[in-house]
Image: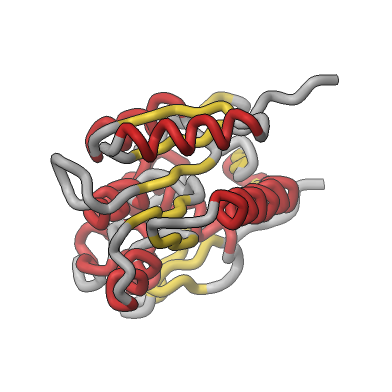
Length: 235
């Protein structure tokens, strides 16, 4: 049985860097996608679903940190920042915004390849361990591995934000997840106080999942704290 090559998206406006990375990655069996701007990179993540992103911060249309913010609202794809900005504050900022790793230019290709392989191994373990959360009363199945929600065997369409909130509640099923944690992880660190965003998304989730707002049995509100996904095992 053959396996599909892992796909790496390079978001960098320097042709020499893209060519160097393309040759190096292709020689190791990766399939390479390329983007020269932040907007093009975000579009490719949405359309192509790469396995990993190599992101430069100095892009011609928008700062790479802003690309990270927008990327993390809809995707958990591993991101390695590859940038000339070597200041500690810049690295911390990128990691806080959701980057998985940070490599400063110029870099050693063997080290970068090792970091790529390590992140992809970790991602593979996460997919293997990702649970299917079921709720019998609602005939609901949430498959984190397939990123799919089924109700009565039929797919439920969720927006990226709705799925991101539900996915985080699933990974902590039975436990309270604070409003601040959800807002930071789904909307980004600058939205930690925007609780109305979260209330709207939770209300829409309840409607789509068939959880009555006047007496929810699935998404429980812990007043002033956060939300809890209640689950029951399906035999």
